[in-house]
Image (tube, rainbow, N blue to C red; front, top):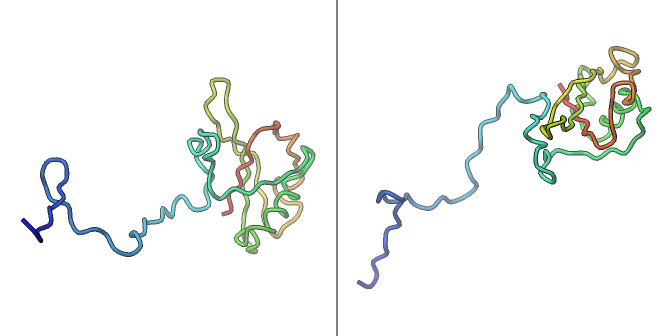
Length: 136
């Protein structure tokens, strides 16, 4: 029959609704996740690491304070007066599964407090590990 369009159906025979128009609906934000470290699963596939990645080239004798200052240059949230930065190493264990190990905390505007003076080497950082920084 001319002029009659065929109704698209889902598997099982139920008709599909009209196609979506405009932007997709927003997904709810998990407010408990904000300020937390990434999960180990987010690092499991090479090339599909977390999207908010910043590459920093540094030395193993860099302190967490030096890294805090670098993060503050690129992340406005880290510049807040009361911002706490939590550092974690992400690396594969002997079975190839990723581990997230928290190694220190700094406060954005307070030098010399908490773990500021600890170096990556002192904390056990190995070349090839990821450094995950959560801004809280």
